[in-house]
Image (tube, rainbow, N blue to C red; front, side, top):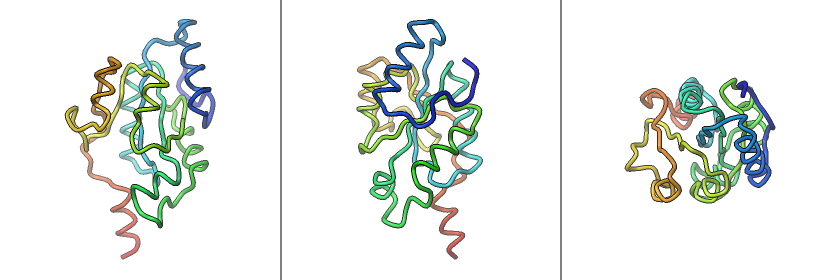
Length: 162
């Protein structure tokens, strides 16, 4: 599969059907799922997604909904609404599909999409990934991707406010 957006922001059920079809047809073998808020994109995000994409044939990016971002980062966030964050993510050559999730963890998304690889940023280790038990149950490989975390959207906003 050629890198690039294949479907924009998709519903989880539609994406599960597309992934199953692509696997069945032999269009691709390894699906990688990465996730995050992606509230303000920075070079660390690009490096994380490129590294994640290198682990398979297809990269799915699960992005937190606006409500989920508010729950995680506070009432003033997100600074960019979901539809715009998804559109920006789709512009990355590494990204093939984008799906939103509202739950506190990726468990339902992992169960629905059944990726081969669950990519997390370097602020995690395999032992600290919140969904590690689900990954193990489903036989999903955990890959820690990207550069050492030196950038943060939250820190960027704080510097801007000062």
